[in-house]
Image: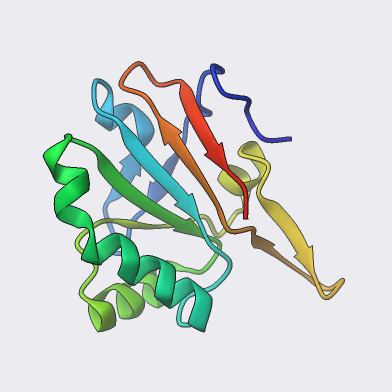
Length: 134
């Protein structure tokens, strides 16, 4: 079940494409765009990441940080980020705990669990301001 608007955003600490851990609490006082996506280097996920990349200045103008999350590993994220020059962290939720906490973990084809394409806007106080599904 996804956290409802107004609820405290679930905490997380995940390794990034750069290898360093990133925690939600690191960005207290700033708005965060937390987007979940199924898989690196697939057409829809690449389009989504590149749209965030191409509009990064609008997010920076309001002080917002973008964080991408999928269940792929750090090496996959690094290659994906490097290939598309992504100017924001991509987080590896290999243990699927964050996707579960945000209600985005979905079974595809009845055999594999991936994050669903959802975006959460987290306000500077750490609460979910908006949830965009699929």
